[in-house]
Image (tube, rainbow, N blue to C red; front, side, top):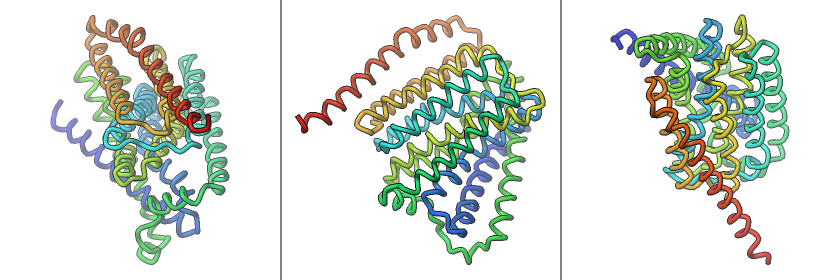
Length: 364
């Protein structure tokens, strides 16, 4: 890796983080200036703003014909969000999970993963597929805003503390905020171009596929806003917001980012056989695993966080071994599929059973 490629990666990454942060702050203040509640801002502007790097990178990659990076970015980001970011946040402090998140939003996240797998099964996310996904995102956003208007005062107070503007509107007038939003979008586009170019160069120099780079380097890089938001929220004690941010981001990644990439790509987003055989099913499994982990006492414990982190380490190890054509790659995959996953499923099921038993015990 030469110096120019390294500068592209680091510079693009820095611009993506800065652009995402500027977009979230400016858009939040602009929405608040029109009387939009902090609750709605947190559910829409912040959730979508933290996914802005994924959106820009995937759309730009699709437009440039780099479909593997576009698709790998979405799948890799969702895996990173669940296994790495949620896992790390839970290790820092056990994360409380809102009951609505378990009953409604997590099943929607699972449904979005199932839909992504179904639509990509023919090897391509076409324009019609993209329009369907984007349409579902619009419907989900409208429904979320309407249902949140009846939210509990406790949740409203938490959102007010987390997302209310820190400065008065007189500090940043609306025209200035609009200019800042446009500047943030420009920074994101510039950063995505540098980051994608650097990632492609790295893939070629290492002899690995663009899909692997999209699933790892690009996915982790574009997930930095979610990482920062969730860890800061966990450290502040707003732990249910930390989980909600990840679930909302994953829904937006599939419906908005993958859908948007499918709409703008001249020939759709091609999905490789490797992504269909391994990575997309893993995204679905990770999404499904969230439900019992969340439903167990409505807390994501440190032990479950460590489990998520361990699975992410195994996943990255598999990608590296597979890229090197190592004979250990299929053995690792076999061990995870036939031993680790069944044991984990049994453990999560037992945890949910014990949780339900504990809840019913006082009523007996």
